[in-house]
Structures are given as C-alpha cells and as structure tokens.
Amino acid sequence: MISEPRLSIIIPAYKSIHLGQVFQSLKDQTNQNYSLYVFDDASTEDIKTCFESYFNNQPHRHYHRFAENMGGSNLAKHWNRCLKLVDQHEWIWLFSDDDVMSNDCVSAFYENVDNPKVFNVMRFILNGTNDNNDFLSFKNPPCGSTLSCEQFFSDLYGGHIDARMPEFIIKTSKLKEIGGFVPYDLAWRSDNATIMRLTYPDHIFVMPHGEVLWRFGSTNVSGTKKYNQRKNAVTVEFFNWVDAFFTEKGLSYQLSPEDLLKAYGRSFLLEENRSISAMLSDYAANLSYVNTPPRQELFKKSVEKNIIHEILFEAVSPYEREQHRLITENARLADLSCQQQGELECIHKECDKLRSEISSLSNTVEYLSTKNRKHLKLVRVLIASIAIILLLMAIVFFLG
Image (cartoon, rainbow, N blue to C red; front, side, top):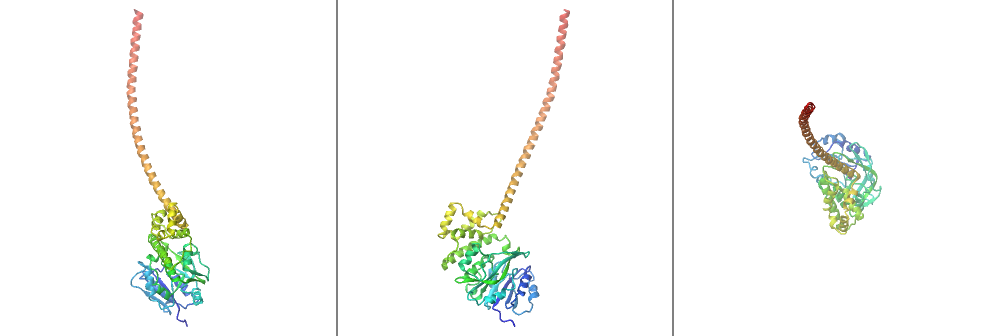
C-alpha cells in the first residue's frame, strides 16, 4: 500500500506535444510515492485525454482544468494559482509540460529528504534536450554539495553552472512564507529570484543522483526570440532586485567587478534590428549598479576608456555574437545592393546620355560630310574651268 506522499509534483500544462514523454518519465519512477497534479491552463489542446491515457483513476494522480488561461499573460501568477491548491504537501516539485526526469528522481528525494544538510531547497543534476530529443550537456555543481545564496548567484551568472526551475524541489512552508514564486514578466528570472529567496540564509542541497532534462524547444519562451525585448527589461529589473536584496541581507558578490559586468552582459539577448552596442548601452544605463559605489567608479572608468561595450560584447554568448554578425552582414549586403543598384541606374542614365550625344555627333558628321561633298564638287568644277581657261589662253598665245 502506498503511504501518504510527502512530495507533490505540479505540472502547469498548456502544450501537449511532449506531455506524453513527461508522463512516461513519471510512470517509470522506481518510487511511485508522490502526488501528481496536472493543471490544465485552459489549453486549446487535449490535455485531459493525454493525462487519462497514463493515470486514469489512479490514487494521488489529479487533473484540474482552469476556466481562464493565466499563463499566457502572467506565468508566475499561474504557478502561484496552482500552488494554492496543493499546499497541504510538505514538499513540492514544480515541473513542466515538456521536460523529463530520470527514473530515480523520486527515490533520490526520499533517500535524502531527512539529510541534515537539507533545508528548503533540493536540486537534481540538470542537463538539456531539444525538439529532436538530442542530449545537451549543462554545467552542474558537484553531487552531494551545497550552495549558498551568494554562491548560487555567482556560479550561475559567472558561467560555472546552469539553472532553470524543474530541477528544484522546494519545501512548501518556506515557499508560502516568501509569498510564492517571484512574479516577473514571462516568469523570466522568476526561477532564479525564487531560489535565491528560498535559499537565504541556508543553502541548496545537490542530490547525489537523479537528473532532469530541460527542453530547449521552439514552443517555449526560452526557445523563441520574439520576446527578447521583454526578457531584457526583466533582466534589468532582476539585477536591480539582486542589488537591493544583497544590500538588505548584507551579502557580497563573489565576482570581481569586471566579472560582474560580464555577468550582466552575458544575460542580455539580441533584439531584432538593434546592435549589441546600442542595446547594451540602453539597458546598462538602467541598471542600478552604475549608481552604486564602487561599481559606479568602475562604470565611469569603463566609459572613459570606451571599453564598457567591449566588456559586455565579450560576455555575449558565441551563438548570439554569430547571430549578430549574420544580421549585420545581411544588412551590409542589403545596403551594398541598394548602393550598387543606385550606381547601376546612374550608369544607365550616363549610357543613355552618351548614346544621345553619339547620335547627335553622328548626325553632325553626316551633315558635314554631305556639305563637304558639295563643296568638293564645286572645287572640282572650278579647277576644271580654270584649266580650260588656261588651255585656251595658251592656244591663243601660240596662234598669236
């Protein structure tokens, strides 16, 4: 008989394309002692039928459909709506409708939940996948280790680890204490801010085993560029919150000022029809760190030396730089094409003008040639007349 689960797994579902894989990874768990809550966010796809094909009438497996879609306008608010319906469980695991977990994750949870190193947050190893189910390798802290709030931020934004949301299991009482998930637009950076608030003043415990594959797909927010401007605005808001949070709690950045600047630069995404330099200039100007000593002095020196954009540009990922290079090159070729088209039109006009001048010159030559032929004929007649006169005079002379 299955005991009352200490763990509830929440899946806010809207897309069904990978949902079967998610459910199969749940059915494959070696330990089935969990409660599952699938919350249908008024989806236009048949989430219920997919759920019932895997979990119909099974204990601790629940499906609920909301009448109103909320995730489309405020995803973090939708997460909190789901949370209110499952807060009776000791631990919650906010999963997604397209990621998958290894079959030992629930077992790892129960093996470690009473470990004295565990406080409010537990973390699995995180790697990635895509729409083709290819494996993507991510950076992770050592298994069995712990991360403080400062270390989590510094390792994440210093490029030493990767983090999303589905790899974390959270103590429900602590999540309620901080007011739920931090509600940023698109839930962008909501995961990082929430984990940091949950972790302080304790730490994250990294599971000895168990793995989550986070999907970088064309249908999720992370996989599309159309929201990049909104994501960048949230990034400014998030970093300003981090600055205030660290100041309030007396925490210190475990990054050098230069690495902190790179962390900011690395966090921005390219926006359509905007250069990296212009984009970062706009957003850097709105970051509170430029007005906070001693970072203000660093920013001032960077501007004076004209290196701020070089620092930030260096921090942008190679993929983003390549995308920007292609955009810039295409724009350059388009400008060159327009320029060449204009030059070609000028050449055509010059050719037409030259043809007109040649035609006019040809007519002039022909006119002069005709006139010259008439003059030549008169000269010949005149010469012949003179010759005849001279001949007559010679005859008269000899006869005389």
